[in-house]
Each structure stands twice: as C-alpha cells, then as structure tokens.
Length: 528
Image (cartoon, rainbow, N blue to C red):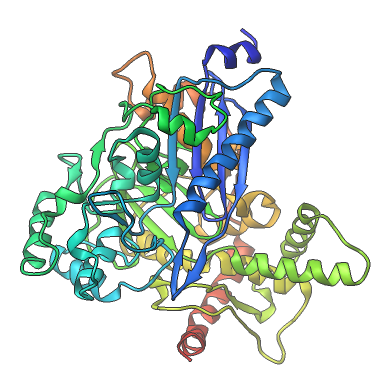
C-alpha cells in the first residue's frame, strides 16, 4: 500500500502538541514515519501580571495547525485527509485552568511560566513531604484558596491545557498519568492521585470557600495505551470547520509535553533520560529507585506508563538568545546584508562553537521569568563582564548558549552528585537543537555524559503523542510501551552521539563558578 492509499484507508495517526511558541500537528504512517505537518505560531501574553493564553487562541490555533496539516497532506499525496486510526493531544504541563459547572472559565489561564505561588508551594511541600513546585496545578489552586479569590467556591473542574483540548474534542474529562503527575502527586502503586496527600489537602482546605473534595474536580486518569474517548461531531467540526474530517476516531489519553518528549526519544526506562529545550528547558531522568531526600529543585513526575521520573525544570531557556538573534538580524538589515532567519541562526551557532570554553569571562543570565532553582520570583536578562574580559562575538554567543543550560546544570548536579543518580543515555530534542553544532557538545559537557540527538528529534512532542496514539492500537495488548517503542519505532536507529570534552568541561567549571557568584547581581536587578 502506498502512502496515498494508506492515508485514504485511515492507516495513519495524528499527534497535536501545544508548545509555548507554536502548535504543531503531525501525521504519521503505520510505520510511524512523519508524513505531513501543520504549524501555528502563537505567543503567551503578560496580562495583569499573569502569563496567559486566551481560550480563543487555543481554538483558533488548533484549527490553523490542523488546516495546515490537511493542506500539506493534499499537496504532497494528492488525497484528502478524512480519517485516521488514532489522535493524541499533548501540551505544556501544569498551570491553572478551572471551570464552573457550566464549563465557563473562571479566571484567565495561568500557565506554567507564572511564579506567583511561593506561599502555597512551600506549605504543600512541608505538609506532604513531597516537592510541590510553583508551576504545579495544585500549587495554583491552593494559592488561590489562600488568597481567598472569589472564584474558589465555583470550581467544578480543574485540568491542564492538554486535558482541556481533549475535552473539547471528545467531551471526556480525562488525562494521562504523566500530565496528571504535574497536577498532583501520583501514587506509583495505584497509578492514581496519592490518596494520603489528597486527604491532607482536604484537611488543609476545610472551612474555606473551597468546599469540594479535591478528587471531585480532578480529571480521571486513563492508563497509557487505552482509549480515552472518541472524536465527537462537535470535536470534528472544531478541528475542521469544512466538515471533511470524520468523527468517531479514538483518542489516546492526553499527555504533557515532558511525557511526549520521553516517547519521542525512547527514554522511558530506568537510567535513560532526555532534555527538551525551547522556551523552557527540562531534563527527565527515569529513576531506578526513590530519591533519598526531598529537593525543591527536583520534581517527581512519571513516564507515560506511570514510572517515577526526576524532573529538573527551568522556566527560562531560549528567549534571550532569540532576542539577541533578532537584534543581530536588525543590524544586518540596516547594513543591507539581510539573511534568512534559519541562515542567521546557523551562523550565530557556528560562531558560538568557536568561543573560548570559559566564554572569556562573559556571563549571561537568560531570565525572562522567575526561576525556582535559583530563587528568583521574577527575572531580567542580564549580561556581566569584567573590564578585562575577552568580549568577542564568539564569546558573547557562547555565553548566551551556556545561559540556556546553566540553571539546568545547577539542578542536575544535585541529582547526580547529591543523590548519586546514574545516567547512561541522554537524548536531546527541541528547538535549541535544530542547529546542534554548538548546543549538543555543550549539553554533553554540562551533564558530563554522552548526549544523543535522534534524527526524529526535530518532530518533537507532536510526533511523540502520535506514537502514544499508535500504541493505543497495538495488536499485542500485553506489549509494554518500552517494548513497543524499542521494537517497532526505534529499532535500528542510533542517532548522532556527542561525548563530553574535557576542555569544555573545565571551561564550564570556571564559567559556572562566576555564574553562581553573579546570581546576587541578577537577584538585585530582578528585585529592583
């Protein structure tokens, strides 16, 4: 069967992911090869001090990327995309989306990027003896309760962005276990929300305007590989207002971008892990055993199968580098030497690769938002250097790349040095690695281990959630996700591996010493 026939027969899968700067839909064949894609660029807004996206932008972005997918399918293969074997929805984890009994949004969507829940996160961490980061949904809920916000008594449903889009398409208030693990802690023995901690939360909120039991408002967890609902007529019309795309298609459990990144890099077994880098950067390390201590810098979430994962999440990654690229692009345009965006990025990454290993004493802080790992409630990009620093374009750009990963290294050092967690295979994916000439070797040096970049890494989480949709339709129902990925998706694929270089590791040690010392200046700048 050729590709056109496979598309017409519906022997394909669709994955849609809502990232921080773009929404992407990917169509894959029965062999998991990406066939076509559609993209919608979007951006969060800072409104009344809250990072948010409007629900209208969610809906319109969904339609735009899906229309692009249908158009590219028709142009490449000469057939209309009318059906598929499975659909998966993924999105940025965490945040705060709450609705009343009539499905009306109670307050604007508060995304993972907000650092406004310090009081609640500290209180819940102490109560649960389990790290609750500021961006987690439960921290946002408890902070709203502590603030005595007017909407608290009207909450009927709390979910994530992926859970919300899945509800629009299927009418089901459900979620995958990985995305759920960023709402509230998961009990790995039961595969559900930790019952003991739920009772503790109910006791904490007794006598407040929040009168419901916590589990009454949380989405139901559906195991990976199971059907989590089918595309309704209204959902099909939302995806494709032309009416070409059919209803009745099974949908897998909606998942977070961290979990789809794990699927897309085949890092779902112990001692494997991945780093996803774009607007934010985070590492996901599958654990052999529980950590000995609670660390505020390390979150405990799960794989799509529910196995415990240590997550080091940083709110800030590429935004500052992107701003510098735009500035250099403006300079070239003014000089009459305009370059395409892709060529400019390639050039600047090449220059970064040629910088000194310690960046010549040029230190960059990429903080656009607050950062829990380094104790920042708000952020301001900052560049520091001594009068005698070697201030070249190469060193500036290398420092900007270092800053994308420096906070991640601080968190990962706790995991590997304090907790003695072993790393055997780390896979990298995300926008920062589209031009890997500088970024991949630097990440290897940051982590002190080999880093592999798969050929499929550029497809990202949209491809990852399409894989989970395909796993839902697996012929052998007893086959684990890890076996399915290894045997049917990644068999024979090795990727490009980079080992850490000692010279770069030595230079990074000098850079990170100065970076840590300079955090006092960053905190002062952000606070004033």
